[in-house]
Length: 260
Image (cartoon, rainbow, N blue to C red):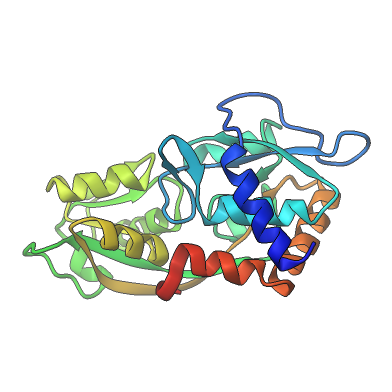
């Protein structure tokens, strides 16, 4: 499928994707049933969020484009809190995770990943016009800090707690970064640690600012069960194709624009 037809396909099918909160995943391993169920965690713009009740975002468009280049069919999307995605995958509720999930050693012990599809660092968000202007992680000491449970941002805060920089009582975890940023806006916390492109998206839409960036050089990948080698190979092949035919670049420009 050429790049033009691929973009047309995305426009005509993206809105038709059905979001299911439950249901059985397809048998992604092959045979006659080549349908798969994708899982994500809305509230992480611009990777995945809800607009007018519709699930949209970079991960949504990218996975649909990648799967379209394979012999698999993406049957539906299921929504979870981020920390519930790996349990949903390993219990066969879904077949693939598309949720800006960082590839790391801890997760790699439980699931496998596709090849990386995006690289990012961490950022610290603060209230616009507020008195708190940190310039490094140690400045978070003595302040209430939030992060989404199970994310790299949460891991960064936990390290501060482990080395004595922060009190555990000052750390608030959330099921979604939308809730964390709302708490920041309302003055219930002083900072939020989260992925740089997501922080930039919140800063563009809400009265919050990126105070500083923490270089982590993390890579996102699609999560797959450890025994699903066929699906992993298919996703890697599809990802390579969309990068070669220009679809990937189009989606980066669509969702990140000048940010990337």
